[in-house]
Image 1 (cartoon, rainbow, N blue to C red):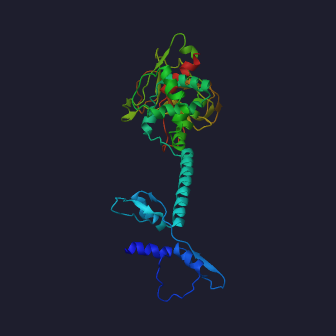
Image 2: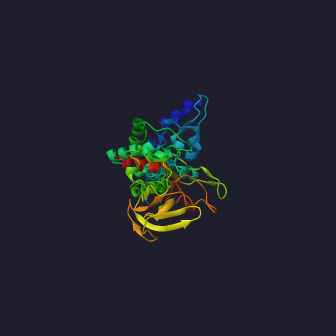
Image 3: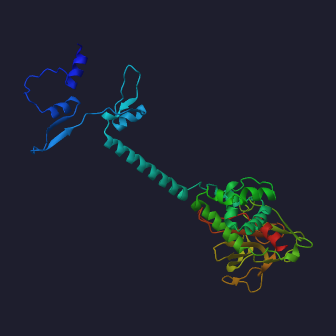
Amino acid sequence: MSVRSRDIKRRLGINTPRRRGTRRGANPWRTSMSAIGIGIGPSSKGKRGLTTLDLPRFRLPRIRLPRLRLKRLGLRPVASNRRRRGYIQLSNISLRRIKEQLFRLSVFMVISLLAFGVWQLLRPGMRVRVNPDIVAAFRVPHRSIALLQDYANTHNIPFAQLFAVFNAENDFFPEKSAVYDLSVLETMYVVDFYRIMRRYNARSLAPYVTMFENLFSELVVFPIPSQWYQNEPSIMFGDSWGVDHNFQGNRMHMGTAVIDRENIRGRVPVVSMTHGHVEEAGWNNQLGYFVGITTSNGTYYLYAHLDSLAPGLAAGQHVLAGHPLGYMGNTGGGRGGRSFPVHLHVGISPLVDFTRGRFWINPYPLLRYLESQNQL
């Protein structure tokens, strides 16, 4: 009889020889329970009448987990001749540890989802990083200003935000560009306005939004009365920003020159484009007779090279848009005077946060915008 069959018969109680040390007349119920692998013994607490039931260890089914996760879960892979690499036995696993790992995984997933949702709401977005000199040049197509304003009113969109996004998307037009088509403006910037806005950092875009909001809320009328340029244009102006001035050294022209076609001093009147108070009014060697008006938002408007000032105009006086300031001339130009055509120098300096010192912006697109609005 083989060892295996003898062991089976001994377990089933068939011709099982009595072991050394066992007493005769043993409990048959205890013996039969022991035959199927269930042991009954005294209680671990030592109390009389109580017993402990030692159930056999049943082999649970095997599962397959990634080998990279075995070490983390405290499991060991089982390798055999049957190529069961990567299989683990649940009988060797601490179920409590598995529950802890699953709980940690679920907590991690919940926290990750919450963090992703908060990030979607509060994500910083792209920052507007542009050279202040490019912003000052303000080469935006001037016809697009009126078109964007009409679209903003139609679609109930804040115009200053729309205009700031339009400039930011085009890097504030580092080079002069052609006028955008009407359908392109509506498709690219108006329909997808809120989607584009979410891409930008609100704090970095806010200074430009504030600047454009102040400028377009302040500007009311063209600096020359409409009768001088509607029927028979007596004036002309172009984008002269950045042109070199060869008096008192090489200096960049930081404004727009509105020129009198007849080149007659004291002929064309000059009026205020905005409401505000007169901060400066008088004579300067380079500016000649000039007037500086500051609005409630802190924007400074300069009117220079006047032939003379309007009677009664003085510093500290409050003026409204359209108030007479003087007449176009060619005064100033530095010591010894300088010969140049009769014109009005218009300078605009908004109060901004993205640069230090006084910031001047190109008035040409704004003047074209005012010219088109006053002709309606």
